Amino acid sequence: MENNKEKQLGIERSNRLKRLRNATRLSRSAFAKKHEQYGLKKTNIQNWEDVRWKGLTDRGAQQLIKAFADEGFDVTLEYLMFGIGKDPLDSTSIKLPDSVIKLSEKSIIANELKLFYKFNDNAVDSRITDDSLAPFIMPGDYVAGSNYFDDYIKKAVGYLSIVHTIEGEVVVRMVEEGKDKEHFTLTCLNQKTKAAHSILINIKLLSAAPVLWIRRPNLK
Image (cartoon, rainbow, N blue to C red; front, side, top):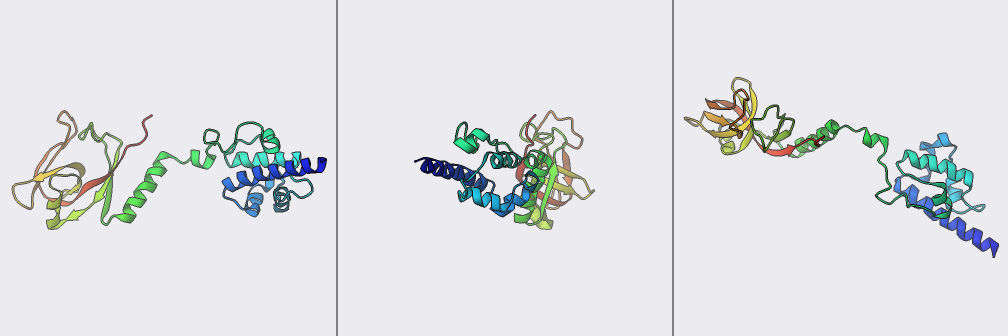
């Protein structure tokens, strides 16, 4: 009878261990190698998960707890050995790994832009530096679009666009028709803006990219 209880306890510990390890998306070998500084070996993990020699021990559990902490899971000895306490895989218990926490918002936005460039021809992006488009687009926001050139620039008329003027200036403005097909007027959205060049009348453009993507950094 005692042997049956020990066996059942070993199976339950094994199931909790396998569930937690699977959540890390690491094989036994990869998990052991990644956390070998805690004394973990593939053979140990295999023995614990296959319930050999009574399965997981207190010493092994202590090693695993440290390894799971590095993976962002708050695992306690009570839970791992006896299933007591909060489930570490409960969404409210999961901690983000340091590598994710340290990923700056600037890096996240850069990755979003990489995807935009991947799926859009003639892509261009810009960061808003003034209040000329407030309150719809604010200083610090990022925008991106796909460039039109030459006679196709007229397709941007009526749209908020990233424009390159013939003088080399880059601004984000509403594109309106100019005095002829080669000239355009650029206007802002915020009539109270103090931004320079809020309105540019009858100018030539090198390109115009209607805004397709807008990203506002998280508000602090």
